[in-house]
Image (cartoon, rainbow, N blue to C red; front, side):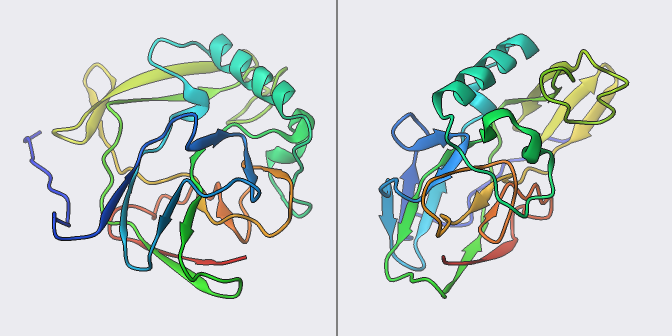
Length: 221
């Protein structure tokens, strides 16, 4: 695999904001329109958004660590609601908590309910690591064939930023095609809402076509 050098499709002359992901600028598990904006931008501005890894996991963490973090999150926000029309496994989450980390919210000056927000995804730089997991079926029956693999499993991968690939196993290299699994606008309804099910607000769409060069349209609520 040849090495490549990637450059961002914008330069110093563009209005580019940088939003890091930390305890102040992100939430775990829910959408909540009562949160004040952590950044305000104008229409047409470019924003570099750092995203956080699932439940703030780090390389070396285990499936037991993930489950413990999820339990702490569910106990910390017991009043989360589930979208009534959600046809996903999120309907079965105890107490309704989600488990995705979201950076924001970002306010767009002049955007009003009824407007449509056009989001252009210009550039994505993945973390140098990531993981896949299936939870224990007794804790959360999600993933592929939970009844056949009740113990679940978790696997970490190292991503090579030069080639955009990771090694699935010795001799098997897979090219990455990163995309934001969750992206959306704040919901009109007050309260905390699980960030597992997608909806009219966008959310956890897991749309693999939302990669570099794509455009997403979201209705402002």
